[in-house]
Amino acid sequence: MKFTEVTVHTTSEGSELVADILWRYSNYGVAISDVKDVIALQRDKVMYWDYMDEELTRDTGEALVKAFITVEDTPAYMPQIRADIDEMRENCGGCMPLGSLEITTRTVEGDDWIEIWRKHFRPIHIGGRVVVVPEWIKYEKQPEEVTVLLDSNMAFGTGEHETTSMCLELLQEYLTPQSVCLDVGCGSGILGISAVLLGAKSAYLTDIDPVATDSAAHNCKLNGVADKCTVKRTDLIGESEIVADIALANITADVLCRLAPTLPAHVREGGTLILSGIIKEKLSGVLQTFAAVGFEHIKTVNKGEWYACAFKK
Image (cartoon, rainbow, N blue to C red; front, side, top):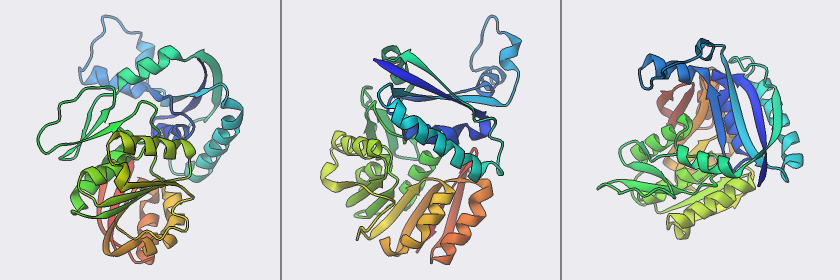
């Protein structure tokens, strides 16, 4: 099977933002190549090489983000990818260095890549109870753990990304038994599925990306929670009448702020709202926007370049 390898030239700071975009168009894998990772391995003595070209440890500040999409999908997806990258440049270019954002493509044989990509993933422990497990790996669950299985064709949302892991940690902190949950921009469905496995009564998952909703629906079945999860392809939460005890949105700050006026109607009085995907420069704007629509800020957590916040209505 042939794939188009899409490479975006960016920076360490911008690599996760670019990866978020590329995940929208690929369910075959996204990879970040950053010289800072090699430098860290050497510095922390995690890995040794008998010989290494010194050029490989010269910090140029550049990172390469690669995604793999089918040759058939390439004509439709490439204009959308370029438009999304341009929008990111416009929204975030003044907040952090993004590099050239040059996009290059080449055609590759993809069968070997899929297997290499699958080998990269291992069970990920998040918070006190959640373990995210690729469905092809056998994992012996420990007492009190909740295992979330994700298929190999998953959309964005594996638990590796800081924004997702912070959401899961806050979810475990604020979820109460029999909660009704709302997961806006659900991606692979990891947040809604985790909520149900942790004891939520039900979860309502939405996304505008058909790859994401197909993946989320599949993962709901894989985890045996399809009867408690509703997956809808809709722009944000659309005209849904869902009223949640706990709502989660792991998107970007600009989209979160656009979403703010619609959310109060979908969170119960006294309910919890968890937001993630926020960079430092956008944090105060998010806090002000959600305070203005009736949400009290109760907690902020930070990992790497990213912030997540919890609110009470």
